[in-house]
Image 1 (tube, rainbow, N blue to C red):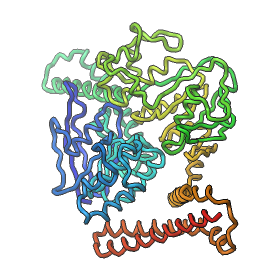
Image 2: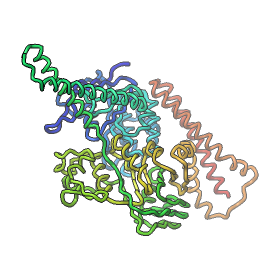
Image 3: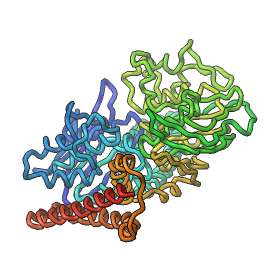
Amino acid sequence: MALLVSAQSLKKSFGAKPLFEGVSLTVNDGDRLGLIGPNGAGKSTFLQILAGKMDVDSGEVSLRKNARLAYVTQESAFPAGVTVSQVLEAKMPGDEYEYERQIILSRVGFVDNDAPVETLSGGWRKRLAIAEALATDPELLMLDEPTNHLDLAGILWLEKLLTGARFASVVITHDRYFLENVATHVAELAPSYPGGLFLVKGNYGEFLERKADFLIAQESQRDALASRVRSEVEWLRRGPKARTTKAKARIDTAHEFIGELAEVTARQRTAQRVGIDFTASERRTKRLVEAENLGGEVGGKRLFSGIEFVLGPGVRLGLVGPNGSGKTTLMRILMGDLAPAEGTMKQADLLKIVYFAQNRAEKLDPALPLRRALCPHGDSVMYQGRPIHVAPWAKRFSFPVEQLDQPVGRLSGGEKARVHIARLMLESADLLLLDEPTNDLDIPTLETLEESLLEFPGAVVLVTHDRYMLDRVSTRVLGLYGDGNAGIFADYSQWEQSQPTPKELAAKAKLAAAQAAAEPAKIEAPKKKLSYKDQREWDGMEARILEAETAVEARRAAMEAAAASGDAAALAHVFTDLADAEKARDTLYERWQELEAKQ
């Protein structure tokens, strides 16, 4: 495969300390590279350097001549007052690109192309940012933490987009299932590796196997070096009398072994994990929270109803559902901050709840020194009945002592998340409510958090788009559909299998819109009985509409294929076919509305 971009011996520093140095990497046509690494290792900086958005202190980045590269940042920003279609028009101006703009927005999943951008959720803004990048027809697409803003449906969509794409991609993500399903290569940027980067060809599972082999080999190397250093130190202590050339060479070799051992030991030290251990109360109550026929709504819209469950010690309930389905609303009801729209929610007396908020970064004063954020009073914290000085407490969360006087506002998203976890660990709890705790956390911290949740003796309610954590931690999954319905599932996979297909969702939305439009006619006239012929037509209408939606999807796929081939004549032909299919579908919806009005 042809080379797209090459980075050789890159070094980047902020202040006196290098962020990374000596890092080399190549990306070829067709590669799907997952870039991972601990918080603070410089992944976003490294990606910006590859994209030509940031200068490097030393080293060289080479991009293939005339190669088209697109870069999508963590936070998506658009001009004020623009619509979805106008964002793409700015990248692809002119009526001659109307077909292509429609194709791209269709691939990304937009239905209303005239929707104002400011009305979009974070997940749909991320989809629009990706559509904007696709409008440049990239050969290499770079994405910085896209899964942080997407719900589970959005992540599945992105997986499908990248695995079926002609372009190469580099994605920073800590979503392990995403890496398993998408990546053809995985690279970990971390100072614990020689050269600062560990690259494996394969998906995340193969990466873990190779990493385990590397760590075993590194441990063997450290043991062998330690043994050799002990031998050489003993020889040096004997003080050889003859300062011959051979003796001097052995002294030099001994110093080299000592330096090499120090380097390997230092690399292993930097790979230490964050220590997470939530404090449980001594409560022995078997029923901490009991929900009966629970319902919730926002702004008059019913989000869920009929929910029933009991939370006791050891119960870990995962909440899943599309954005806006009511997950955070249910969390607020469980906390007692919001009254349920229906049903009851009983709490055990003096129930102790610890809440990990989704907008946790906003709760930290950016001017506050890290020392005070970790230790609000004095120079020690009281953890599980014993005092711990702020320095070892900070070290437990991978903060060096020299960072203690740094303002919180200068911390990365992952570092702020670790501060929040440190504060929550000081509170005893019967019930942990975790709303998107995985955002900004690196994989080692995610693994430690999972272990802590599995060992926590109280109850846990977990909202996350990390499918791996849901599968590993949850004992039950509560699925919210966003239309007022909900259901209990054994695990995430069972919930995923219960989801309607995109065609079924589209048909359902169209039917709902047609029903809403027909509502005045239903009110104005009393309900009538349909004729035999109309009744037969009515009975088969939903199936015909689904068939029509399937035909539209097939024509749309054919149009995408024609656009990819660059055949203008074929594109024009399939576009006409698509228009005909859409017209036939719309005619069915109009007829459905007429029959609805007759009843």
